[in-house]
Image (tube, rainbow, N blue to C red; front, side, top):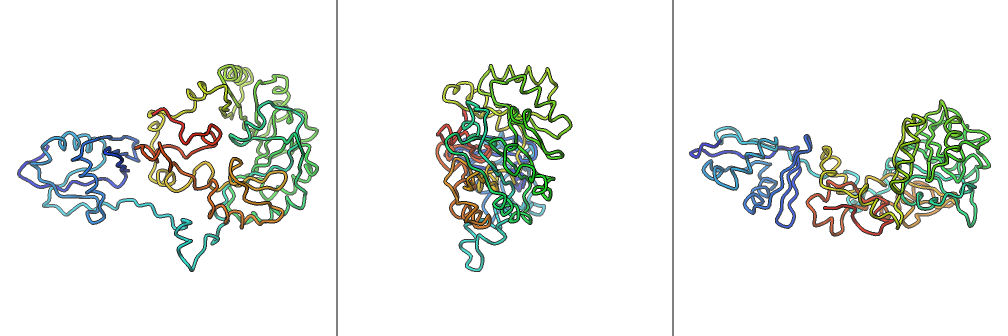
Length: 408
């Protein structure tokens, strides 16, 4: 493989992510998803040298040294997995443009620049807006609040009901008309019982292309009137009432619908499977729900393994995103029926739409970071080679009360 009498340029490909932690190293090919892990001190020194700015991803080595262990075995795997290569020194040095993390509008950078502020074009960050127009519902789901805390879902307030006024809703929609919002979710309670439900068709018309109406399957079947031509998201919470499900399927026939099946255990899973097969339900999503009584099921179905992490290739863009922002929460705001606004419903309140503009609320989140930039920056994740290959922390971590959900 090597001519021991020659010198070589050893170079690392620009599509290879490298992480060194506590005497261990990980190389990850962002094109193929393959990886190399090693704990050799000599190889770690080599990788550190490759990533020094002055070396531009290439260093000179004697062929005699490369023919020795541990270099020989490492380089055989390194080249086989298309992570880099060798070139004789007689050739020009192979210069690799190594990717670097450089977010032009990173909030820390903006705060340091006196001529700019984190409010600059801040509306561009708003990618998803969740609006609860009311919080009244008669279904009485036993997992109502639990599902709401763990992901997008309708919810009710059983102590005191609230409802957004038409003027408040108009105020919100006016503020986002020029924002690059990719998804506008409208929730209740039961949105069909919203006092201005009929007016929603006109109010939401400019946003219709990306508006999703969330209606619990029990409410959708019983609603006096549903708006046609919108996208529908239908939470189906356990245990499934087949009569309600049939009514809802018939009512939403012809509408673009996504079904969200919440499951807490094997029994829920089997019942849902039966319903999916019996009624040939398309466009469905599994939504595991954590309860203190189903920890074993949740660990088996949701907790990450090494195989899960390497199940599909991650781009450098995704890895860098995991380092700087939370890919679950970033760009999302939730407006509750009382007007309170959150970057995440499990985080601190940012303000209220009746007194605060959307622009100021986004700016506040960018500076205070209640959710959008919460990354895996706590132990044990900080001690793990896979720290930024894992998905960002989700609501599950917050609800369970631990920083990671993995079995590594």
